Length: 259
Ligand SMILES: [Ca+2]
Image (cartoon, rainbow, N blue to C red; front, side, top):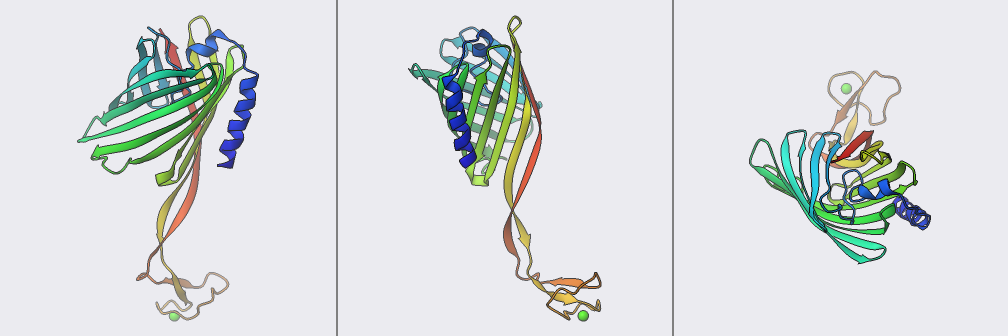
């Protein structure tokens, strides 16, 4: 949590030095995957490709964003969000994502609310959502999803952003810092960064009964002998669970193209 507070503080500082930039504001409704409170300008439409996810978003009216997408053609999802301006520095959005896989009887959903503070070219967002699944996914996806994201445009054709998630039910933290580069004339946006995750899971282990030094299956000593000439005998009747923490990170790339 301390790292998040540091990042939030850093972004608050950055907001104070926010500059105006045209290209910076068009794609301000989205970080990489996460939405901000800002609405997509009316009649805008863009294609967004994030690793295996491909979606199209459009704004039929001033404050409404609607989209449809697919995770690697393994399913389809729709999303919608409604933006509300709270004051000059604060904008909120409520929305939901709902989808189903290509095969099987299942669905998944993520109603969410986000609050964005700052300006479209320098901001940060706090969000909360609740994931759920039905059918084949029942129970698998249920849980709170908290997120924090931020963007700082540098006024030229570059910006820096991050988006992070915390999933308390499965004790998983995800953070994705990225550079944004964009073209002003044909309105294309690239986010290039990496996704890091820290997650935990429970693993079954067994108490050690002792060590077998003559390989007859019977314990001879309880202290681990030196060298490698022994077998470890476990108490398989008394399994216990331990929580194991692990980490992964891989490059992340997204591309948004406005029409
Ligand atoms: Ca023995």
